[in-house]
Structure formats: structure tokens, C-alpha cells
Amino acid sequence: MSDAPVAVVTGGNRGIGLETCRQLAALGHRVVLTARDGAKGAAAARRLGAGAEAYQLDVTSAADAEALAAHLAERYGRLDVLVNNAAINYDTWQRVTTADLDQVRVTAETNLYGPWQLVQALLPLLRASRQARIVNVSSGAGAIDDLGAGTPAYSITKLALNGLTLMLARDLRQDRILVNAVCPGWVNTDMGGGGGRPVADGAAGVVWAATLPDGGPSGGFFRDRRRIPW
Ligand code: NAP
Image 1 (cartoon, rainbow, N blue to C red):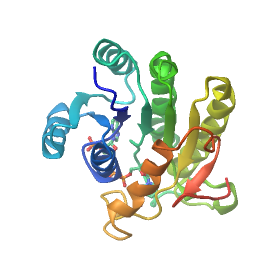
Image 2 (spheres, rainbow, N blue to C red):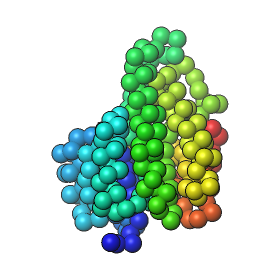
Image 3 (cartoon, helix red, strand yellow):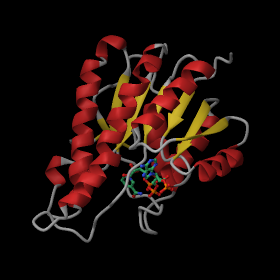
Image 4 (tube, helix red, strand yellow):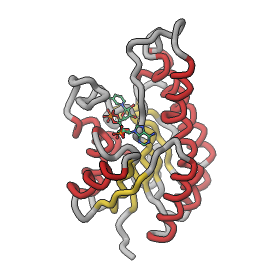
């Protein structure tokens, strides 16, 4: 079995997830590019070449999380990097006082419970790594001081994801698993809406947190390698 670090990225078929897969593969990681649409994931992994393999994973599915854990256990026996990147619903059309709470609940399934469930399912494999890292791709839209009335579903789920990051970091300290939240900034992807900076710049901060050396920070919120307020 190869010594290359094994990395799982959710929502790896496009946007920041795909670019994170590309950059990790370029650094020599064995990348498991996951996507909820198996065909899209397979096509994206093919474009990245031999360093990447596709795996079908909808982050809202407990069965998919368990199946991925079984696949990784059989193939690699460990997991070194988990990037919780997949997210939905930058709901610019809503305000907190009138928000559709069903939409908020659906958003939480992907943006909060998805990462939480995946960490739980993959934890035995992360514990089997000598240098495990978890990166939760978050957003400044979930920073407490910046909360406004807008994007309620998105902001509240990113705020909660930040809380989850801190709680996991504290609980996993004795396992020496580094857990951080990263805001990629405003990035030119489908979610970014056609503006923002190049996707490579947004993914670079995610890759930095995924490849921190031993003794690196844990329980932090970062953009472009610098701490930002929760
Ligand atoms: P994007 O272009 O909309 O891509 C989102 C990815 O998530 C897609 O691959 C999508 O898959 C996947 N996804 C959605 N629901 C899923 C599910 N249930 N299971 C598995 N995959 C699922 O978004 P992006 O801009 O690359 O954003 C990536 C991350 O950066 C997100 O966490 C986002 O909140 C964060 N972020 C982005 C910006 C920005 O300006 N773009 C700013 C701050 C934070 P499908 O192709 O199947 O839909």
C-alpha cells in the first residue's frame, strides 16, 4: 500500500471542492473525490488523472457515509484528510423574519448534519492516521459579528458548522487530529454567482488547513491562512 496521504473531499465534482481535489492530488495525495451524482464524480476524477478516484456520496445519507467508511477501510485502512466542502443554499432571497424554516432544515441537513455525520462515520479511520486533519469549509457569512438579516438558512448553518468545528477540535485534541474551519473568500463558482476571485485562490486556504504540520493550529477559523473572528 502506498504511503501517500489519503484525502476525502465532499462535493468534489465542481467548484472549490474540485479545485481542492486538484491541488491535493498535485501535492501527492491519494484523493477520493466524492460527489452525490456518481457520473459527475467519475467524470471529474478522470480529468484529474491517476491521483484521484471517484466515490458516490450524498452527505445527507447515513448509508452513503457508512459505505464510504467500509470502502476506505478495505482499500486504505485509514484516512488522513477529510474536507467537508459540500454545501447548499446561499439564500440571498430570504430574510430571517420571514424565512421558510423547511428550507432552513433542509439546508442544515447538508451544511451541518452532513459534515457531522461524516466525521462520526470516518473517525475510526481518521484515528488510524498518523496525521489526521479535518477541514470544514465554512463562510464569513456565518461569523457572529457579521450576522445580519439576510441569507438566514446559509448563515445559521455555517455559524453552527463553526461551532461544530470548535467542539470537534476540543474533543479530538487527545487524538492529535487537527480540526479547523476555513472561509475560502468570495470565489467565482456557481455558488459565488459569477463574481469573486479565482477558484484556485479560494481552494488554497482549504488545502493549507488540510496539510498542516504536526503542532499546527486546531479549533480555528481561517481565511487565506490567517485567523478570522468567529
Ligand atoms: P458550488 O459550486 O455550488 O458547489 C457545491 C458542491 O456541493 C457541488 O459539488 C454540489 O454537488 C455539492 N453538494 C451539494 N449538496 C450535496 C450533497 N447533499 N451531497 C454531496 N454533495 C453535495 O459551491 P462552491 O462555491 O464550490 O462552495 C464550496 C464550499 O465553499 C461550500 O461549503 C460553500 O459554502 C463555501 N463557500 C463558498 C463561497 C463562494 O464564494 N463560492 C464563499 C464562502 C464559502 P452537485 O453538483 O451535485 O450539486
